[in-house]
Image (cartoon, rainbow, N blue to C red; front, top):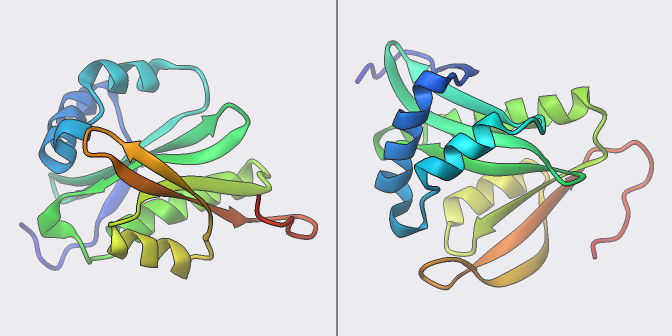
Length: 161
């Protein structure tokens, strides 16, 4: 592990999908996206963006974001445990927000497990607000999720539903 190297982010390729699927199982266990779902999401023509973070030749994380219906959403974000706390998740969120601004999206959305305190703090620090709680959203495990939104504008921010 290269301790001092800066992570580089790039768009994922077909060749990264097996690695993503393997990390999904390691990081999320039974709640992981299946290889079939990953393949499906990667090949859908919906403006999905799969990003990979690397340090040297080592892949250290990935993110998936894009439109879910008419909502620009962070769909998945994972950083290998030994690389957490080094700004990689924040860098992926910068990519997410930059794409949203480029596309002139008015607001962005995400879901986060209510027990993922580090992620919630990161999102709040970037201006995301809790909109509602989804009971038993993450399965298996019956873990609730906070739905969070960040207003990007233009115009006045609407009230949270």
